[in-house]
Length: 505
Image 1 (cartoon, rainbow, N blue to C red):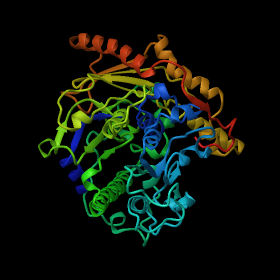
Image 2: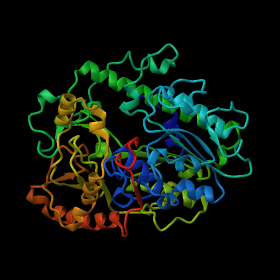
Image 3: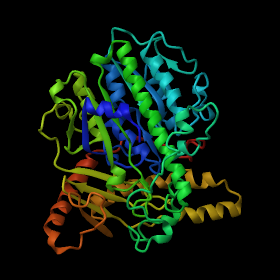
């Protein structure tokens, strides 16, 4: 895979090699980045029936930085329902000085889905986002009619904070790639001349003898179509992989254009760049497809911090410190000289990015509360640098496959059956949060020796040799989940189709 500009960013900054999300699914993960909170605290997911309240949003990093004199922008994708009415509230747009984004999935051709991008010259996602980046930074760049401006241009006497958000390489975007004549060569020919192997440890559905997780726990027959990597022939998988590689190289080119633009505008000596992702993805490894689990494949993400003011001797370093994406907001505020609010749960890792060896945590806690008719189980994990412990709870969710069957029989739109969110679901989700804290017992557990088994192939939970490690991590789980939940009620608004019939979830 060709990512020379991201590689350069890492080689000139700090690459965190042991970085994790808190929830391995887009919406809660992105909100966790914005609010520096675990999902168990902020309480918003696709199945939560809630949106982020105005009160909680005031303590997001974009609002805090804007209130402290920063000129702020948001470009690309928003997948966080903010305010009363979620995506239709208008609160997100009003929270920035510059807004050039669409709510929900963008598709590879964003103009097909969001009118705000119609004035762009480009048609493809990375290139349209790049036009927004140029306009935000450069007063001489072409003005985009769709973009929302609080001020006509970025003030030269104010610091700025820009969030650039891709939908790629998510399958919701790569699946819409069409190799149009207007597409850049990257998206038509790159990687197509290579022999693309299947992922290491890939297992096709027909070859699975013992499922990775018990069938009554992970209902794979209800998996969403976009994540059926183990069900499709190798030629279809190769096409998926090629598109993902192409998308990542397109993103990389934008990173290169961004750094070049900063240099051209003489902003490069005082602009910090942070690069990360909202989750990983199984592409058929161990017979799994998709996200929303607590394995390394889904929770382990890149975090790169490039700070041009870091002494050269401390650049190009790798840190294996346990860090999380909830650490990004407090780190940004620390670098900006702004006091973080008490609502933040993440840690400031700016010292680690400057070469300090003192680490901020001994354990990482991750969770999955997206347990729905699509088959995924509820689970939580706690890990240190050597070991990981995962616990799962009973999966009583009704089958999406059956819902699709009866929707077709009765003439009900399938997407309404599958994706509409109703009020009783709020109670179910809230109980998902509270039940483990109220002594709900796991129905299945896993223990992995990450140091020897980074791919998590061998569950050692029943090995007597590791009983002491298991007991230690079980005790630590209680500490971590209690801290993740925090205190007080979730600062959320009701956001269901019962209240907002046209709401998107």
